[in-house]
Length: 258
Ligand SMILES: NC(=O)c1ccc[n+]([C@@H]2O[C@H](COP(=O)([O-])OP(=O)(O)OC[C@H]3O[C@@H](n4cnc5c(N)ncnc54)[C@H](O)[C@@H]3O)[C@@H](O)[C@H]2O)c1
Image (cartoon, rainbow, N blue to C red):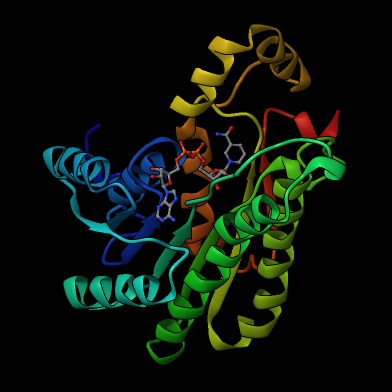
C-alpha cells in the first residue's frame, strides 16, 4: 500500500473505522488513509488494531490504534473522544464492526443468541452513530457510512437474527439521514455481498459446496475483495458524494439483482 496524493479526497479530515483490525474494516481504514485522512483504527482486538495502524503508518499514512467495545456505550463515547483529542475533530466515520452469534431455525433459536446478534450488529451501530453525530452536530457536520449486508435485502432462511439486525441498520441509516441532512451530516450504508475476509475463507474451507454456490449467486460469479467495499465507502464518505444521503449501496458483483 502506498499513499497517492492524487487520491487525497479525504485530505485534512479525521476519521474512525470500527472493526478495523481485519477484513473489510481494515481495508476501509487503509483506503481512508490513502485518501488523506487521519484514521483512528478501532477494534476490540488491540493486536490487530495496532497491526492495521502500523501498516498505514509504514505506507506513509497517519493512523492510531484504539481498543473499544462498540457494544458498550461508555467505550463508544471514549472512542469518539479519543479521535477528537488525537486529531482535533471527527468528520468521517465508518461503523463496520459486527458479529453474528449464530444461525438456525427460529423455533430452536435462543432468546439470548437473538438479543446478542441484535446488540452486536444493530445496537452497536446506533451507539456509534449517537456519539459520532453528537460531535459532528457541534462541529460543522460530517459523513457516516454504516456497513450493512446483502442479508438485509431479502428473506434469509436460518439467518434471521442477522438479517433482521442488518435490515435495522438500513432503516437506522435512512431515518437518521432524514433527521440530520439539514444539519450537514450525510449518513449512508454499504451492503456487501460475499467478501473474501479471513472469516469467510475459514468457513469456505469447511464448506466448499456452499462456497461455490455463493460465488455463483453473484452475477459476476466471484467473491468480492475487502478493497472493493472500501472503494465504495471512501466515495460515500468523501465530498464526491456531497448530495448523497440515506442511500444503501450494494457492492456485491450483482448478487442483489439476480
Ligand atoms: N465478509 C463478508 O462477506 C460480509 C458480507 C456482508 C456484510 N459484512 C459486514 O461487513 C462488516 C465487516 O465484516 P468482516 O467480515 O470484515 O468481519 P470480521 O469478522 O472479519 O471482522 C470484524 C472485526 O470487528 C471486530 N469486532 C467485533 N466485535 C467488536 C466490538 N464489539 N467492538 C469493536 N470491534 C469489534 C473484530 O475484532 C474484527 O476485527 C460487518 O458489519 C459484517 O456484518 C461482511
